Amino acid sequence: MAGCVVIPDGLLIAFLFAVGASIGSFLNVVIYRLPRDLSLVRPGSACPSCKNPIAFYDNIPILSWLILMGKCRKCKAKISPRYFIIELLTALLFVALYIIYFQTSLKRGVGGFSEGGFVFYLVHIIMLASFIAASAIDLEFCVIPLTICWIVTAVGFAGSVLGRFFYTPEIIRSYDLFPTASAKTAILSTGGLIGLLISILLLLAGVIKRSYPEEKSDLENSQTQQEQEKNYNHRLEMLKEVIFLLPIVFGSLVALKIYKNAPQFEEWWTNFSQLPVIAGLFGCLWGYFIGCAIVWTTRILGTFVFGREAMGLGDVHLMGAVGAVLGPWPTIAAFFIAPFFGLAWAVFCMFFKKIRQIPYGPFLSTGVFVVMILHDAVMNWLQFVFYR
Image (tube, rainbow, N blue to C red; front, side, top):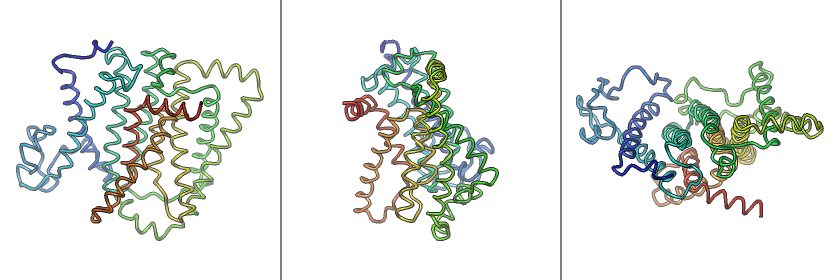
């Protein structure tokens, strides 16, 4: 099966590298413009210093930065190496994920690239590319745009549905290719979704108060972060978030009670929820809730304990997106792997004191990548720990 996707002359790998570099070029646009509330489409690329439009031959991913030696052709102003790094990193990521999934035994059950594996690959590479942009923005502005997280979440749902047309339910469940819900987690997800809708309606109606009033843009929000640290009673803000979450928890518990105490409904629900596409949708929803819950719980408890905001809502939505793509257990594993990268960075900063501490988003993204490439080993370990 692997022979169906391996091209001896490396044409596919070269193609993926070129596509990855082009996507990286677009990510640079997202990184610069999204937190500044600028259009991602217009105007075209221009030099940040002299504002002159960049010609197409000076906008070739990776190559143009090297040829121009990191300078604008017109004004000779330096162009940040970030542009080159993001393009090269994304290109290498496109190639690396393909090799890991289709030319090694690290991830089983994916099959051939042209036999449905491209769906699995596409969903995962979109998530990783999006997290490159989110991490870069988080590094610069200490915020994660929720738009990026929502796009990844939508891709997770769409990919899970589409994947059911290329893989059998047995393969999906056996190798944990896409999130899949049991009847019980499906009913919990349904109750949680109803509770979430109620919370949103109460929030819009003003019955529930929003925590940390939003700024006009992510850039302005990052610029006023220090003032917010002084002006907000963070424990009170967390109490508002707890109130927002109560209908979600209550809705899940009520739905589960109805499911257990109504035999006829239980039978119908089991048959309905285990239809392949439906099980996939509920699996994504359950993964999203678990991803959000583990970070949100940490955020609330940490803030109550330390009296200052612990983790951001961007981190909550980022891990929710991961849950929609990978499912609950890999997301939990990624969350607990991330602190090791944070600790390594903290040790590094001890020896280079001029280097500032960085936000948590990049560590979460790195943890997600590790779980993706070591997915089978991680899942086998989790099964050994919890089901032995």
